[in-house]
Image 1: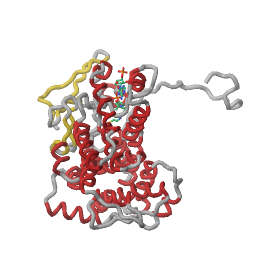
Image 2: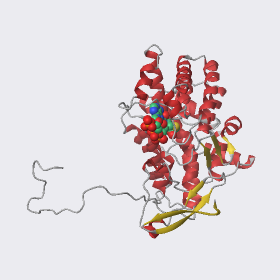
Image 3: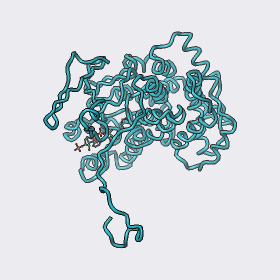
Image 4: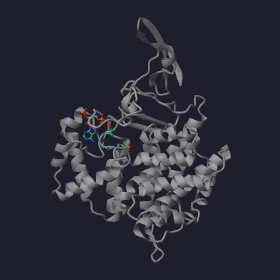
Length: 436
Ligand code: CMC
C-alpha cells in the first residue's frame, strides 16, 4: 500500500476544510484513509453492509469484480484450480508463497498425522441431536477444539493449531454426517491424500469399503481450491472481528463457520439445489421462481445469482460449470439438474431485471450439482464450503494479528433510540397501555 501521489480528498464541514490522504493498493485501488476522521471532525461514517468500507489492508486475495478476476497471492484462480492441490494452495494462502517440494511434503505429512480426533470427542457428537444440521455441529466441534488445546498461543502453538485445524476439519465434517446417520465413525487413513481420505470417512462403513474414484477425489480437491479464500466476505470478516479481540484461532474459525451457514452466504449452495429440484418438480419451468425473485413485494431471491463484488461472471462459477458435465458423465449420474441450471442461467442472463442489476451465477450455483452427483447429501454442501474456506480464514486471521495497524474491531453507530428519560421508581414497569 502506498500513499497515492500526494493526492487527497477534501471534506468541507461547518466552514472548515479537512484533507484526507488517499491510499493505493498494488492493483491501483484507491481508498480514502479516514482513520483520523472522528478525532479531527467529530464525524463518523455510516455504511450499511460495509459496501464502501475497506476494513483492512490485505495481501492475500485480489478480486476485480468488474472483470471477473480472482487471484490468490497473485496466482489466477483458474491456474491454481488446474495445477495445484488444496494443501499446496493452503500453504500459499497461509505463508504467502508457493511451497518448495520439501515444504509441501513436510506440510502434508504433518496434516496427515493430525487427522484423528481425541477419543473424548465421541461423547461430544453423541450429545447432539441426530437431526442436527452439520454446520452448527461443525461450528461447535471446531469451537470445542479450543477445550482440548488450551496452551497460550505462542507462534509455534499457532502453527500447531493451524495444522490441527486443517487436519481435523474433514474428520469433524465426516463425523457430523455419520452421526446424523447413526453409523460408526470411520477413522482417517494416513496413506490417503486429503480429499480421498475425506471421501472414505464420509462414504465407507466398517462393513463396506468405499472405492475412491481418483477423478472424484481430484474434483473435490479442485472444489476446495476454488473456495479457499475470497477476501473480506461475511465469514472472513467475522473471523477477523472475533480474532481482533485476541480470541484464539479455534474460537475465531468456529464463528466463521456460523457466519458461512447463512443462506445469503455459503448456505446458498444448499438452497440452489432445493430450488433446482423444485423447478424439476414443476415440469422444469423456472417461471414461478423468476417472477417471485423479481417481485419487489416478495423476499425470494434466485439462489446462486448475484454477488456484492462480482458485477460480471464469477470466475469460480465458470470453472465449476465446465467441471459439472465431466463429473456427471464420469459418474453416469443424472444430468437433469445440470440441464435445468444451464437453462435457468440462459434465461436469467437474457432477462432485463438481471441484466440491469448485473446479476450473474456465483460460485454456489454449480457447486451443488457436482456435490450431488458425487453423492453428498444436500445438508453437507455448506460444510464442504467451510472445509475449502478454512485456509483463507486462517491466513486472514494470521495477517490481522501480524498487522502493525492491529486494533480490536469496534465499529461505531448512529444512535436512533430514545433520548434520556426519567425512571419512576414507584411505578417501575411501564404502565399498561403506554406506547412502546
Ligand atoms: N435474485 C433476485 N434479485 C437479486 C438477487 C437475486 N439472487 N441478488 C440481488 N438481487 C437484486 C436485489 O433485490 C437488488 O434489487 P433492487 O436494486 O431493485 O433493490 C439488487 O439486485 C442489488 O442487490 P443487493 O441485495 O443490494 O446486493 P448485495 O450485494 O447486498 O447482495 C447477495 C449480494 C449475494 C447477498 C445477493 O445477490 C443474493 O442474495 N444472492 C442470492 C444468494 C446467493 O447466491 N448467495 C451466495 C453469494 S456468493 C458465495 C458466498 O459469498 O457465499
